Image (cartoon, rainbow, N blue to C red):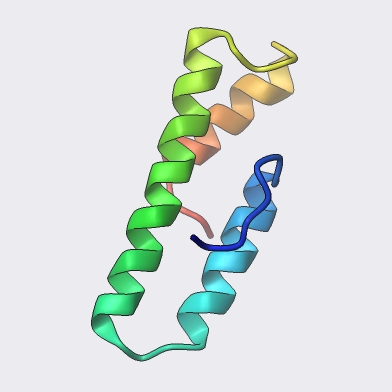
Length: 72
């Protein structure tokens, strides 16, 4: 829906959604973008919590905490 590859990094997800948001002033479209981004990040976080991530390093655990917050 957002044109984000399945293996996109957190930064790529944020950059793409920020770009899409900057390109529209339509409130409904902006809401759809935000909801799609939130769903992607929730899925990624759930996968990490469930242990589906490929690596369980300190860095990936820290990234999960960042993903639980907002894109900055």
